[in-house]
Length: 320
Image (tube, rainbow, N blue to C red; front, top):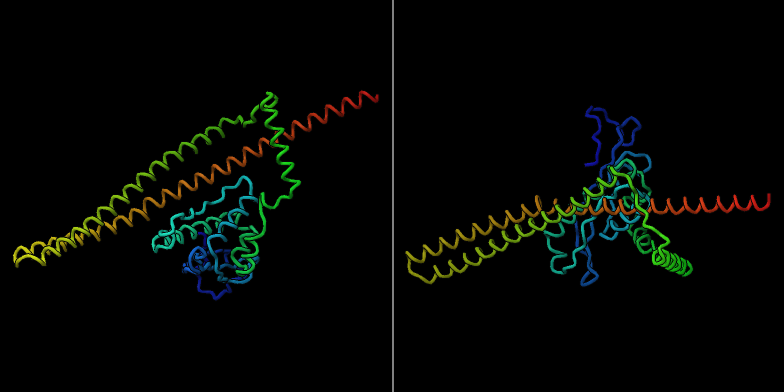
């Protein structure tokens, strides 16, 4: 939790009093389905409590949807290069699961963790985009979401330049003029190798967790079906045999309920945390990729400066 507790003294200080300990508390609550059909989506109530002076007041409540969280993450990823940006929960592609109570609650918890991780980061919490996300009205957020960003904001001339750059790079590689630029820091390479290996192990563990949850659910459903059948059979038989079948059916249904509860607990306490770890490692890999790209650009700029210095030296010799 990102909140820094205030002093336990009984003084009646204002939440925004300069002497109060700084804190920022964010909660994602009350998921509600809005719209119908393909236009349907889930909205969340995002509650912010803070005494930080850059915020509008001690408490702010706004309504946000999943795409608003995506907007926040994309903005932070674009602006805070080299900083690990917390991962978002993936978007369900299966319509029948998208609005199930279990999926909605899992996503709510994951979104709450996401925004709290950002708010607890000493640099990300100072982001203007975070303040916008936590305070802006729905109309403002909708306008920001639909503003062109990234590659879609580029002009046709920019696309032509991108094409020329790619074409030039391909030509250089084919002609053997360019060698791959990679960072040769042993400690960094060791860490990068560890991250890639960790992703593989976590992904494998998450698959086993998924199978375990699925097995519990299937067994629970089978016991439920068997219990119903046994109770129906008991109703058709005589007193003694019928009672036995009915009791067997009740026991089977009780076991079914127990297994379904265990499946849910395994999902929330085992599979979902593993999925979160996998997403976190993938976000770290994205940060590593940004570092590699920055290192490559640095090498290219250094080479450009070197060539310009040589050309300048040759020009000075020519006119001397």
